[in-house]
Length: 255
Image 1 (spheres, rainbow, N blue to C red):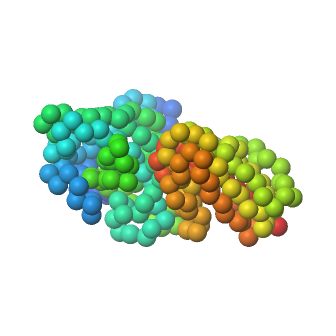
Image 2 (image 1 turned 90 degrees about the horizontal axis):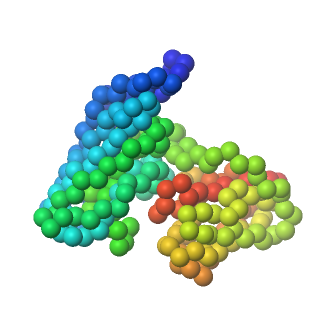
Protein backbone atom coordinates (compact mmCIF):
# COMPACT_ATOMS: atom_id res chain seq x y z
CA UNK A 1 0.00 0.00 0.00
CA UNK A 2 1.47 3.45 -0.84
CA UNK A 3 2.69 5.23 2.24
CA UNK A 4 0.30 7.81 3.65
CA UNK A 5 -2.83 6.33 2.03
CA UNK A 6 -5.86 4.59 3.45
CA UNK A 7 -7.79 2.32 1.08
CA UNK A 8 -11.43 1.40 1.59
CA UNK A 9 -13.06 -1.17 -0.68
CA UNK A 10 -16.79 -1.09 -1.25
CA UNK A 11 -19.05 -4.12 -1.61
CA UNK A 12 -19.59 -3.21 -5.25
CA UNK A 13 -15.86 -3.58 -5.84
CA UNK A 14 -15.05 0.14 -6.02
CA UNK A 15 -12.11 1.58 -4.15
CA UNK A 16 -12.05 4.62 -1.90
CA UNK A 17 -8.61 6.21 -1.67
CA UNK A 18 -8.15 8.58 1.24
CA UNK A 19 -5.03 10.70 1.50
CA UNK A 20 -3.69 10.93 5.04
CA UNK A 21 -2.98 14.55 5.96
CA UNK A 22 -4.47 15.91 2.74
CA UNK A 23 -7.94 16.74 1.49
CA UNK A 24 -9.62 13.45 0.58
CA UNK A 25 -11.56 13.02 -2.63
CA UNK A 26 -13.95 10.12 -2.12
CA UNK A 27 -16.39 8.84 -4.74
CA UNK A 28 -19.93 8.76 -3.36
CA UNK A 29 -21.15 5.26 -2.48
CA UNK A 30 -24.79 4.18 -2.37
CA UNK A 31 -25.80 1.03 -0.46
CA UNK A 32 -29.38 -0.21 -0.49
CA UNK A 33 -31.10 -1.54 2.63
CA UNK A 34 -32.76 -4.94 2.56
CA UNK A 35 -35.09 -6.73 4.95
CA UNK A 36 -33.63 -9.12 7.48
CA UNK A 37 -35.06 -12.55 8.18
CA UNK A 38 -37.21 -11.06 10.96
CA UNK A 39 -39.40 -9.32 8.36
CA UNK A 40 -40.44 -6.62 10.82
CA UNK A 41 -41.59 -3.36 9.18
CA UNK A 42 -42.30 -5.27 5.93
CA UNK A 43 -42.70 -2.10 3.87
CA UNK A 44 -39.44 -0.55 5.08
CA UNK A 45 -36.59 0.25 2.71
CA UNK A 46 -34.07 2.90 1.90
CA UNK A 47 -30.44 3.61 1.16
CA UNK A 48 -27.19 4.67 2.79
CA UNK A 49 -25.13 7.30 0.97
CA UNK A 50 -21.47 7.62 1.96
CA UNK A 51 -19.53 10.68 0.77
CA UNK A 52 -16.47 12.72 1.63
CA UNK A 53 -16.94 15.36 4.34
CA UNK A 54 -13.47 16.92 4.39
CA UNK A 55 -9.99 15.75 5.26
CA UNK A 56 -10.22 12.05 6.08
CA UNK A 57 -13.86 12.44 7.11
CA UNK A 58 -16.89 10.56 5.82
CA UNK A 59 -20.56 11.51 6.03
CA UNK A 60 -23.14 8.72 5.94
CA UNK A 61 -26.78 9.64 5.32
CA UNK A 62 -29.60 7.13 5.78
CA UNK A 63 -32.81 7.83 3.86
CA UNK A 64 -35.54 5.46 5.02
CA UNK A 65 -39.24 4.91 4.30
CA UNK A 66 -41.93 2.39 5.18
CA UNK A 67 -41.06 2.47 8.88
CA UNK A 68 -43.67 2.32 11.62
CA UNK A 69 -44.98 5.89 11.97
CA UNK A 70 -43.71 7.78 15.03
CA UNK A 71 -41.66 4.79 16.19
CA UNK A 72 -38.17 5.35 17.66
CA UNK A 73 -35.22 3.70 15.92
CA UNK A 74 -31.44 3.41 16.23
CA UNK A 75 -28.80 2.69 13.57
CA UNK A 76 -25.18 1.55 13.78
CA UNK A 77 -22.21 0.61 11.67
CA UNK A 78 -21.04 -2.92 12.51
CA UNK A 79 -17.86 -4.89 11.89
CA UNK A 80 -18.03 -8.44 10.57
CA UNK A 81 -18.77 -10.86 13.36
CA UNK A 82 -17.62 -14.41 14.15
CA UNK A 83 -20.44 -16.16 12.29
CA UNK A 84 -19.20 -17.23 8.87
CA UNK A 85 -21.52 -16.01 6.12
CA UNK A 86 -21.33 -14.64 2.59
CA UNK A 87 -23.73 -11.93 3.78
CA UNK A 88 -22.07 -9.41 6.15
CA UNK A 89 -25.47 -8.68 7.71
CA UNK A 90 -25.67 -12.25 9.01
CA UNK A 91 -22.34 -12.31 10.87
CA UNK A 92 -23.53 -10.74 14.17
CA UNK A 93 -20.68 -8.25 14.43
CA UNK A 94 -20.00 -5.57 17.06
CA UNK A 95 -21.08 -1.93 16.88
CA UNK A 96 -18.30 0.36 15.67
CA UNK A 97 -20.13 3.67 15.11
CA UNK A 98 -23.58 4.89 16.11
CA UNK A 99 -25.99 7.24 14.35
CA UNK A 100 -28.05 9.75 16.36
CA UNK A 101 -31.32 8.18 17.62
CA UNK A 102 -34.28 9.08 15.42
CA UNK A 103 -38.06 8.74 15.16
CA UNK A 104 -40.01 7.94 11.99
CA UNK A 105 -42.36 10.64 10.78
CA UNK A 106 -46.15 10.31 10.62
CA UNK A 107 -45.66 8.85 7.13
CA UNK A 108 -42.95 6.39 8.21
CA UNK A 109 -40.02 8.31 6.78
CA UNK A 110 -36.70 9.28 8.35
CA UNK A 111 -33.37 10.82 7.38
CA UNK A 112 -30.41 10.54 9.73
CA UNK A 113 -26.71 11.17 9.22
CA UNK A 114 -23.40 10.80 11.00
CA UNK A 115 -20.02 12.33 10.18
CA UNK A 116 -16.90 10.62 11.49
CA UNK A 117 -13.24 9.98 10.75
CA UNK A 118 -12.83 7.56 7.87
CA UNK A 119 -10.87 5.22 10.17
CA UNK A 120 -14.08 4.64 12.16
CA UNK A 121 -15.55 2.68 9.26
CA UNK A 122 -12.38 1.65 7.42
CA UNK A 123 -11.79 -1.93 6.38
CA UNK A 124 -13.65 -4.41 8.57
CA UNK A 125 -14.99 -1.74 10.97
CA UNK A 126 -17.70 -0.64 8.55
CA UNK A 127 -18.90 -3.93 7.10
CA UNK A 128 -22.63 -3.24 7.38
CA UNK A 129 -25.27 -0.86 8.77
CA UNK A 130 -28.20 -2.07 10.85
CA UNK A 131 -31.42 -0.20 11.64
CA UNK A 132 -32.76 -1.31 15.04
CA UNK A 133 -35.95 -0.73 16.98
CA UNK A 134 -34.88 1.64 19.78
CA UNK A 135 -37.06 -0.18 22.32
CA UNK A 136 -35.40 -3.53 21.57
CA UNK A 137 -32.06 -3.50 19.77
CA UNK A 138 -32.48 -7.19 18.94
CA UNK A 139 -35.21 -6.19 16.46
CA UNK A 140 -33.44 -5.34 13.19
CA UNK A 141 -35.84 -4.60 10.32
CA UNK A 142 -33.21 -3.38 7.83
CA UNK A 143 -29.56 -3.97 6.98
CA UNK A 144 -27.25 -2.55 4.30
CA UNK A 145 -24.09 -4.48 3.39
CA UNK A 146 -21.23 -2.02 2.87
CA UNK A 147 -18.20 -4.21 2.32
CA UNK A 148 -16.82 -7.70 2.76
CA UNK A 149 -13.54 -8.60 4.40
CA UNK A 150 -11.68 -11.94 4.19
CA UNK A 151 -12.44 -14.17 7.23
CA UNK A 152 -8.84 -13.87 8.45
CA UNK A 153 -9.41 -10.18 9.14
CA UNK A 154 -12.48 -10.66 11.28
CA UNK A 155 -10.62 -11.13 14.55
CA UNK A 156 -9.35 -7.53 14.27
CA UNK A 157 -12.84 -6.04 14.01
CA UNK A 158 -12.46 -4.04 17.21
CA UNK A 159 -9.01 -3.13 18.50
CA UNK A 160 -8.92 -1.55 21.95
CA UNK A 161 -6.91 1.62 22.40
CA UNK A 162 -3.47 1.21 23.88
CA UNK A 163 -3.83 0.73 27.63
CA UNK A 164 -1.24 -0.41 30.14
CA UNK A 165 -2.58 -3.71 31.50
CA UNK A 166 -3.05 -4.17 35.20
CA UNK A 167 -0.40 -6.50 36.68
CA UNK A 168 -1.09 -10.22 36.74
CA UNK A 169 -2.86 -11.41 39.83
CA UNK A 170 -2.37 -14.85 41.42
CA UNK A 171 -5.95 -14.99 42.71
CA UNK A 172 -8.40 -17.45 41.17
CA UNK A 173 -11.26 -14.94 40.91
CA UNK A 174 -11.36 -11.42 39.47
CA UNK A 175 -14.27 -9.02 39.12
CA UNK A 176 -14.95 -6.57 36.28
CA UNK A 177 -17.56 -3.89 36.88
CA UNK A 178 -20.01 -3.15 34.07
CA UNK A 179 -20.94 0.52 34.10
CA UNK A 180 -22.91 2.34 31.48
CA UNK A 181 -20.70 2.29 28.36
CA UNK A 182 -17.57 1.04 30.18
CA UNK A 183 -15.93 -2.11 31.53
CA UNK A 184 -13.77 -1.36 34.58
CA UNK A 185 -10.96 -2.23 34.53
CA UNK A 186 -10.96 -2.43 30.75
CA UNK A 187 -7.69 -4.38 30.49
CA UNK A 188 -6.57 -6.92 33.09
CA UNK A 189 -3.91 -9.64 33.27
CA UNK A 190 -4.66 -12.90 35.08
CA UNK A 191 -3.20 -16.37 35.49
CA UNK A 192 -4.59 -19.33 33.55
CA UNK A 193 -7.39 -20.92 35.54
CA UNK A 194 -8.75 -17.59 36.81
CA UNK A 195 -12.49 -17.04 36.81
CA UNK A 196 -13.50 -13.52 35.76
CA UNK A 197 -16.94 -12.28 36.83
CA UNK A 198 -18.57 -9.29 35.16
CA UNK A 199 -20.97 -7.52 37.55
CA UNK A 200 -23.56 -5.16 36.10
CA UNK A 201 -23.64 -1.94 38.12
CA UNK A 202 -25.12 0.41 35.52
CA UNK A 203 -28.63 1.06 34.29
CA UNK A 204 -28.64 0.16 30.58
CA UNK A 205 -28.79 -3.34 29.10
CA UNK A 206 -25.31 -4.80 28.41
CA UNK A 207 -23.66 -8.08 27.44
CA UNK A 208 -20.19 -9.65 27.18
CA UNK A 209 -19.30 -11.12 23.77
CA UNK A 210 -16.00 -12.27 22.26
CA UNK A 211 -15.37 -12.33 18.51
CA UNK A 212 -12.65 -14.97 18.73
CA UNK A 213 -13.86 -17.19 21.60
CA UNK A 214 -17.45 -18.33 20.92
CA UNK A 215 -17.87 -19.76 24.44
CA UNK A 216 -17.20 -16.32 25.94
CA UNK A 217 -20.72 -14.96 25.46
CA UNK A 218 -23.16 -13.83 28.12
CA UNK A 219 -26.90 -13.38 28.00
CA UNK A 220 -28.18 -9.81 28.13
CA UNK A 221 -27.46 -8.49 31.62
CA UNK A 222 -29.54 -6.11 33.70
CA UNK A 223 -28.47 -4.14 36.75
CA UNK A 224 -27.46 -6.49 39.57
CA UNK A 225 -26.87 -9.49 37.30
CA UNK A 226 -23.46 -11.07 36.63
CA UNK A 227 -21.66 -13.39 34.22
CA UNK A 228 -18.59 -15.54 34.92
CA UNK A 229 -16.06 -17.21 32.64
CA UNK A 230 -12.99 -19.30 33.52
CA UNK A 231 -9.92 -18.69 31.35
CA UNK A 232 -8.10 -22.01 31.17
CA UNK A 233 -5.58 -21.20 28.43
CA UNK A 234 -3.02 -18.44 28.01
CA UNK A 235 -3.81 -15.83 25.39
CA UNK A 236 -5.37 -12.44 24.76
CA UNK A 237 -9.16 -12.35 24.85
CA UNK A 238 -10.93 -9.29 23.48
CA UNK A 239 -14.62 -8.76 24.17
CA UNK A 240 -17.28 -6.10 23.72
CA UNK A 241 -20.88 -5.10 24.44
CA UNK A 242 -22.93 -5.45 21.27
CA UNK A 243 -25.28 -2.63 22.28
CA UNK A 244 -22.82 0.21 22.78
CA UNK A 245 -20.19 1.67 20.46
CA UNK A 246 -16.64 1.57 21.85
CA UNK A 247 -17.56 -0.50 24.91
CA UNK A 248 -14.91 -3.21 24.91
CA UNK A 249 -12.27 -4.84 27.08
CA UNK A 250 -9.33 -7.23 27.07
CA UNK A 251 -8.33 -10.14 29.31
CA UNK A 252 -4.64 -11.14 29.06
CA UNK A 253 -4.12 -14.68 30.40
CA UNK A 254 -0.62 -15.87 31.28
CA UNK A 255 0.66 -19.35 32.12
